[in-house]
Image (cartoon, rainbow, N blue to C red; front, side, top):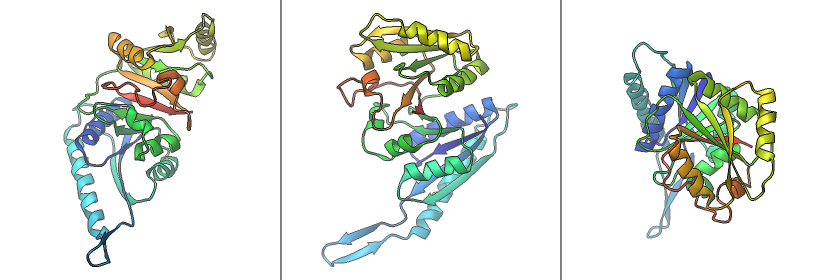
Length: 277
């Protein structure tokens, strides 16, 4: 991991996510780009006069850059002494679609990871709603890490990987094992099924054929109350991170929420790492 893109809207949750990203960057010797995007054209209709009032976007851009520089300075003051000192760049730009803007930036800058704040009190339902966050997840060419408000970075100990076992997800597993190996963390693959088959064991065997990582295991659960089971299990094992694969237009509903379309890990307070499918 060499470069991390941090999305910010200057909110408290975004500041917390940026601080988490800073700790990651120091630990993995990566650099940061703080990124803010705003709409280029916006006008307000005044019904009484029939006129349109256009905002001063030059002023807005200057104010945004001031906020980015404040965040940059704040992060520099939070650097842990004796560790890697990441380069912290700032970028503010106008755009109409955050997902496409982030995608282009991630490709141009060879971004390895995108970090953003997650909706407080309902970590993943925000991903399902029509929103900028949804667009980012749909279009991101690299993993996106959603960090809950007030969550502080600690060394990774346990990663819970919610996997539908539809594919081997070799790139995902490699990313997770590199992440885990650096900190000696274990990876637990969770799978929900109604069948007493050998899919989980087969997955583990195949994974260990192309990934040499001893702290990798698979556990299965009955296919009911999936979101609650996953949340409770992650808490039981004191997970540092939940990982999942995002399939555009699918959202792993069968794996995570079944027919309850907006109940993914409600009130979860663990960071969620989402990989493009």
